[in-house]
Image (cartoon, rainbow, N blue to C red):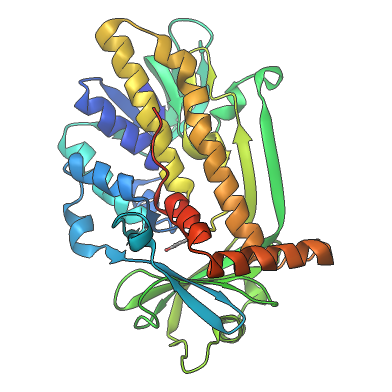
Length: 391
Ligand code: DHB
């Protein structure tokens, strides 16, 4: 098999890239370890930056999003029992918070890619990448037990934090930065009506809580927990008890419902600045992870491939490889700002058992400042809904 761009991973980075390349007349093949059903049902965050929504519309891929997504003019911040609305639309010239689950975006991108005649090989397990330092790299993988080889001009590893792509870059060539947080998130989906018209981010002495939505009948909620907690440590009654305590505000109560999905994730910040090695490029979670507070993961992944697609276009249309040399630096400018914002939202809103009393009070003051200052809210709004592009 042969293609121009071999993409590992049918997540947001890989699928957006395949679509952007297709629009530029550049063919690609995606190899994805999981089944289509697994990709389309993996529960992740659900907040899209304004420009991502506009990009989907410009690509003709937003019909279902426009029918089914939830558009909010702001979010609520809460400290103790005090809940406050932030008018994000008013602070950003009308940009809205778009809630549309990541796996719904993936369903739309997969269906459209296949309808365009694009090739996505599901349940294809990468065994090796070779030739990335030469001119003719290849992805070796197995499919139903058979060994296969995809020869390509370039490989893009959009295969997530645990994928094989990043490991193909020699250790000595890799520059990486990491912070692991001493807490995790427990996320649930439940059958319940909406309790509040917008997202609520709450800081509480017991730990963080977030109320978000999926539809009129399905709600998504998160609470800070111990990262090593087994899910069995959180029977439904304990989850609801924690949510009621952390989200309590006078004259309001959270509506409970049957929990039908729950899981715990650790929180981590990570950046591999070496986003290119020879003919291998990293994009999305393969190169960087953010803690979920603020839901920047998908948005940063799409921003990477926006830069990368242009570099490929420049190469194939004008035989100009300069975009490859500047890819990492251009993408990292936005990535580090996303890392900063996600870290800031996380430290401001969580109860960190390892922080000093001084740091605890500084983080409380950070939130008090945001809740009392229009200037601080404008900075939050700009980051939350998507920083302007400088390239
Ligand atoms: C969602 C998740 C987040 O981490 C966030 O900051 C906002 C929304 C969500 O799943 O809807």
